[in-house]
Amino acid sequence: MKVLAITNQKGGVGKTTTAVNLAASLGAEGQRVLLIDMDPQGNATTGAGITKKDALPTVYQLLIGAASLVEVCIKTEFTFDVLPANRELAGAEVEMIELEQREYRLKNALQQNHDEYDFVLIDCPPALNMLTVNALVAADSVLIPMQCEYYALEGLSDLVETLRKVRHHLNPRLEIEGLLRTMYNGQSTLTQQVSNELENHFGDKVYRTIVPRNVRLAEAPSYGKPVIAFDKHSKGAQAYASLAGEILERATK
Image 1 (cartoon, rainbow, N blue to C red):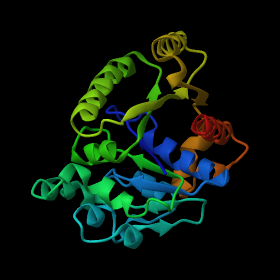
Image 2 (image 1 turned 60 degrees about the vertical axis):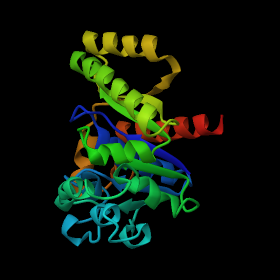
Image 3 (image 1 turned 90 degrees about the horizontal axis):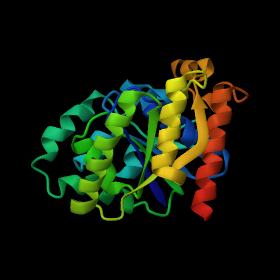
């Protein structure tokens, strides 16, 4: 089982879009996939066709020890399972302060079902809080979606420093799985410059796959579907299918 935390402290870079569509694309490749929604906004939950008010129990109950992974897990109509979230999850941080091994709650819950899945994808909130720390402690590696713009580079250096601290104090095996360029506009000179800078600095950690700006990709969540189920011929669907192939290729190596 490979656990990937999809994270970036900057919001609006395509974390949830990547989590939902990568889960569906890996599932389409025959992989057993679990998607964990660790964001109280619950966008990955609704993006997978699950109504938040119907999603009980949620990751919140899992983290505080009120429910097991099997009780929380929902099988979707697509090719992956989901641990859903809703606004309740925002209160978990306060409650977890008093719990034993608060940073390891998610990791411990996942270990009970270690043989059930090939990939576990964790959609993290856009902040470094106890929910994100739980995700980073549970993860083997981190997938970082980012836009190719100036502020993204600034935020990336902060994220790399955060990962270094987590690796030092809580999870020594944590590494960067890869950087994914999202919402890519190839006609922009700045986009190309930032993209080149990423490749120069991170080398083969930068995925060959580039996710373009795509209307169908933006529309799919409003229908509660991954883009592969909404319009499998769209550029967005093709990009995430390519990313899934690249991740499987790296896993084989």
